[in-house]
Length: 76
Image 1 (tube, helix red, strand yellow):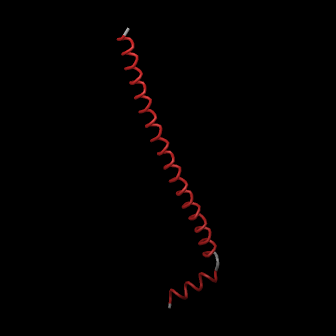
Image 2 (cartoon, one colour):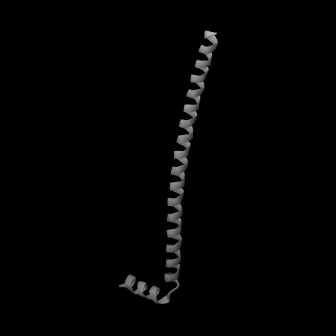
Image 3 (cartoon, rainbow, N blue to C red):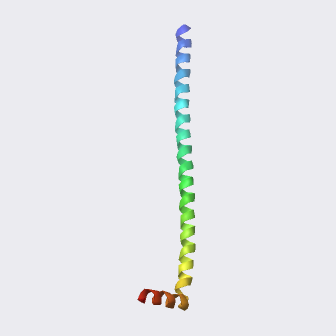
């Protein structure tokens, strides 16, 4: 009877340790997912800013007055 109870206690501790290890792994994964989400948000912000800068530069390049002024500055 005592050996059965001892085995039960031992098995319970093993399972508790396994659950604790699993909880730690899940916590680490959640942290990694959070960091990946933050990084992706930063990349999308950069991409969005670059897209708008490209549009702005394209408009400037299509403006003959701006091109003429820049040419004059470059030649001076």
